[in-house]
Length: 541
Ligand SMILES: [Zn+2]
Image (cartoon, rainbow, N blue to C red):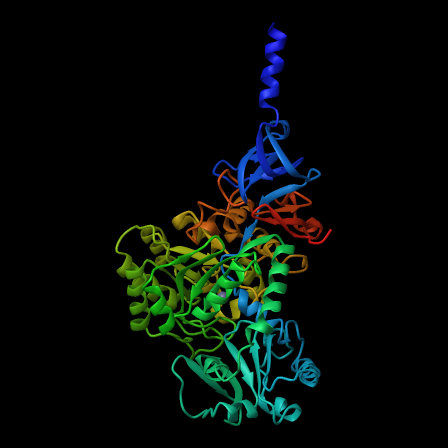
């Protein structure tokens, strides 16, 4: 009698519930509050429905599709909290100057690219004079000698400086003697305009370059998405795009042409303001609930606004790119219409000004989650604002290790001690959102984790460790690219950890990331990526 009852009981519970997918034979790092792990998880309608022990999940759920993870490690799909997705896609159609070792090499690549391009403007990006022997900016006369008639704009790696040729000057009717607010036009030793533009002066030229039409852009967006998926990213951000671009992303997602989740911040323009009156646009794949502003420029091109002059340029304090009254007006609009404000602040002066302005608007501790992007150089006395007003620091550890070779020259020994101070910043509010700022840096959540934890560029063991006292623990670094990044986007209810009810967005790695040191880091590989429980990488087998 007892035996009969027992067998009836077992049959009733074996595979009695439906799922679409079971992932099993895995170590699932849920990144939930208790940092729990599981061996298996069930997915239905794109959402996680249960996590548990291997037999518990396999016995309880009946699924058409089972994924044997072969003892590998499953993490929530990584979230890049600060990136430029469309910018990356657009760059795929442009001249890539990353890593060029000299001005000569840059000109050689330019000549080859121009010969193969039919577009009128030749646009390139990625050079960095800090990698060149004398560290000097390029000059327009040398571009003129190769391309006297076609307009050329070559943007520095940080996107905050560019060199143009004389044809581009003419095309844009640029008069280097007429000042541009928030920008600079540099001169050579003879006092002539060198072709180098800083910050707002770059914008003055780039608006003359015809954008790629959607027919040209869509394949590039798909390629960018494929590159993200291959590295385990399932959510990216696009900080500072036009309304038209945001709506293009939405329509591609609605048509099933683009699967990646995107948190986009609007540029502060008239069309954005019109749109904001209707409140945030939030779909399953797009979140349009924030505005991105620039307070200052970047450190590499000495555009970051500092309280004291640059240590290697004693007359120069950097640039305020947007008048405080304008930031104030947008802060009010964000407050009124329920939008987040995300402001780029790299220098200590920019951060101090914007944090005080935020405090004025926010008034008290709150859950609006306004953000400071970069927060690279910050006086210790200004850090309290983050904790006092619930302001989220959104930082890029890869920048710290990329800037390490020259940042101290710009800042001197005292300020460098408080720069890229991620462990200290994390103390303030208890969270830190991490991004890569691609295309300024490579798309790679793993490189970013490596930089955050080891304070070294990945796979460059010859480099010196950069201020290791500001390193994050691996758990915190992982949180920064998962649950804390989701919090910085107001999306922690649906993503950022693997828990019942959340999107089944996850990435599978061949090793335990937390147990991999710098020497073995190159062995870490993403082997599969899923969005909504659908495999998006690798495809087609
Ligand atoms: Zn950026």
